[in-house]
Image 1: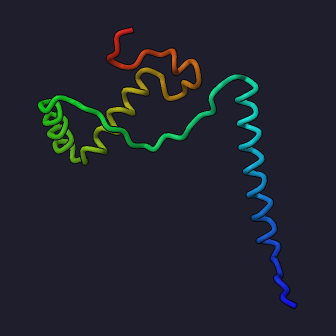
Image 2 (image 1 turned 180 degrees about the vertical axis):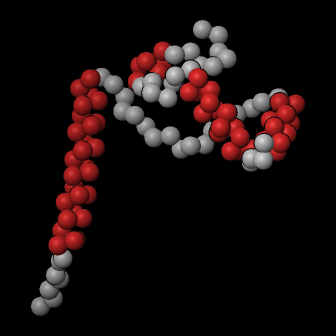
Image 3 (image 1 turned 180 degrees about the horizontal axis):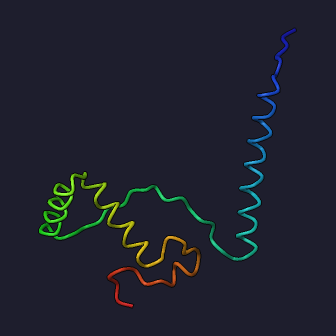
Length: 104
């Protein structure tokens, strides 16, 4: 007869996994009850199209500051978001805030 022993660590891992799944289920039920779409994670990547001259200028600015293009753009976006106080905006408040540069 084959017997498979489990350790307390394995048992705790199963409990934590189940608690995570239960938490997600509760969150989805909460959103459905309120008629709201659940938050979706962002990948941290997006593609944007800018004029070639602006691309050149941004690249030069990054080089002059000693940063990669990605690091420089990230720094500039973070500064813009902090300036407009959007770092703590959530839900409908964030959706109601006009995008930078977009005509309201």
